[in-house]
Structures are given as C-alpha cells and as structure tokens.
Length: 254
Image (cartoon, rainbow, N blue to C red; front, side, top):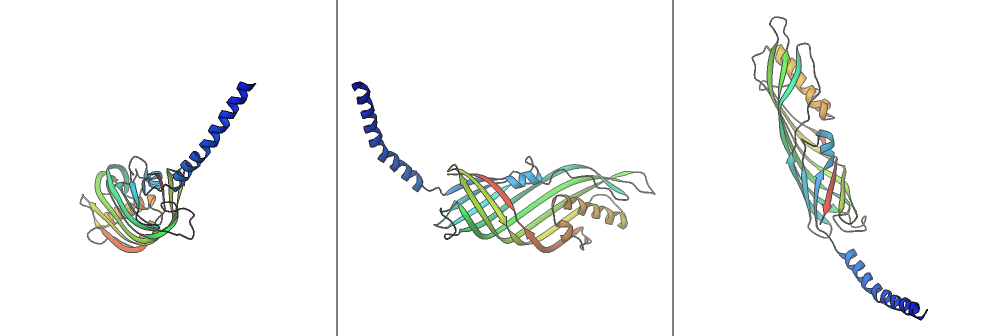
C-alpha cells in the first residue's frame, strides 16, 4: 500500500509540474502564425476535368490584414459533346490546350474575423486570364458533293477584371478550404475560329454557329454573351460583357 501511495504521489507531482509546460506549449502553438498557403483549384478540375485543368496557387500574407494570391497552370476545355447542323457534325478533337493565370489582392476584415490572415472573410480586386485552343474535325454533308472532312482551329480568350468576396477556412491547423463565393467582373471575350477548308459563305456560317454551340457547352452564360454576336470576315468575335468568378481551392498552410 505504501508503495502504491508513493507511486501515486510521484505521478501527481509530475503532472503538476507538467501542466505549466503543456500550457506554455499550447499558448505558443496558438500564437504561432502561418503566412503562406499553397492551393489547388478544385472547382476548375471538377468543371473541366482533372487531367486537363491543373491550376495551382500561392498566397502570401503581406500585413496584419492583407495578402496577395497568384494562380497559374494548364487549363483546356474537356472533350465536347456532339453537335449537328443541317450539314455539319463534329467528329473529334485533334488537339486541346490552354492555360489560366489570375492574381488577387485580399483584405481580411479585422472586425469580422476572430483570427488573422490567411483565415477568415476577405474582399478584394482580382484579374483573371484564360486562353483555350482546340482543333476539331467536322463531317460536312453537302447535297452537291460527297462527304468531306473540314478542319477548324478555335481560340477562345477571356480577360476579366473584378472584385470578390470569399472565406478561407483553416482546419486541423494546416488544411485550407478557400471559397470565392461572389466574384462579379467585367470581361473581354475574344473568340477566333479558322476554317482550313474552302467553303461557301452559307457553309461557313453554319460551322461558325456550331462552334459557338460547342463553346457554350462548358461555359454557362456564353449563350447570353454571344446571342446577338456574329463572326466578322476574319472569323472573330470580340466583345465586352459581364463576367463572374466562383472558385473552391484546397490548400496547405505553412
């Protein structure tokens, strides 16, 4: 019994001595701040395909309530659905490539956030640029000639300037879930298509209409942007219109 009492007393003394040390460690850990985040654009992968949209980002805290974020990586349109007109039907994609780059400056709202950046509610401006290029083969069925294959090269560029409201969660101290929830902007759209075959004007109009349909398959709202727009003599549509940004990032804080 005396031995057991001595053991219990010793354990009690060690626990009492260890509590202040543990409290100091906990306080030090709580006070430690991380100023860097590396992240992956999860929403882009879900929308365009994880194999063809691989955009990574880096965020750096610059002050008590500010940070800057840069995102860049290859981004191409996924394989498109079938489109058919009176004379044309898309047969296959022969090449797909592109990239995305964006920069934003974030102001973390001190009065709304319990913790400092890169955690909490933020607002700020952003600039985003997307460029996509693809080559397609089309089956052309003409009443006056046998079926032939038509080749097109389409390039689609989007430059957007805007503002965003977002929230970055940090869980388990290192896992960051960044959500740009509201991101209205003003965008410049540049759609350029080159037809590598000699076609009549009517046939060109039909295939250009089909190309616009292909673009709108993966870009919600493009049917509104291009609704009253026509290709010019160089096979190009350029216009300014509203834009929007919504992103979910998965990142690591360090």
